[in-house]
Image 1: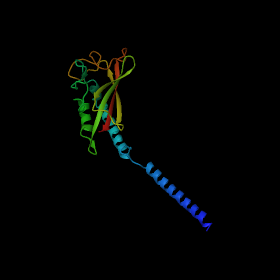
Image 2: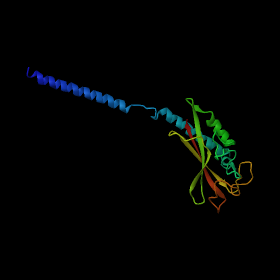
Image 3: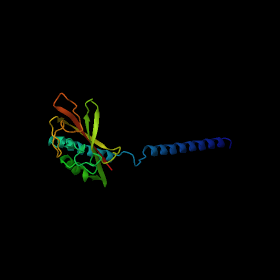
Image 4: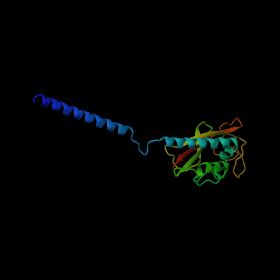
Length: 200
């Protein structure tokens, strides 16, 4: 009887330790595989890639067919904003009323994923005479999500490039938003058009 008591205690202790190890292992496994609504998934990455490819293709096509430069020079010098923009100086409900805007609206305007709308912002970055970088907002639909996709394309604007709006003048003679960054050359500025796309 005296040998059975310590042996029973050892078996009880071993059983308790084994149970504790099993429960700890299960809890650890559950924590490492927990999926939350904010966890990035393969499908989210796939959607991001689709948006990035669509935006990059749109910019490439616009540059090749000659509609990108007129989009950045679609400027109203009298009002100091893009032609037909809201009082805040940008387009808020879609692209501008030109070829680039039509392409943006066609590509993203009616596009939705799992019933969710697609939003986009368009910015134009340029150099100042002091070699700093500034940004002019062309389209603003809101604050992008963390999963936003971005595509950029540069286009050169020369001193004699005409404004694409209904008014007369060119970028060097009118009140254009991008200054002459190369005063001693015919190049006026190099504009970077950036599209940011995300799912709302």
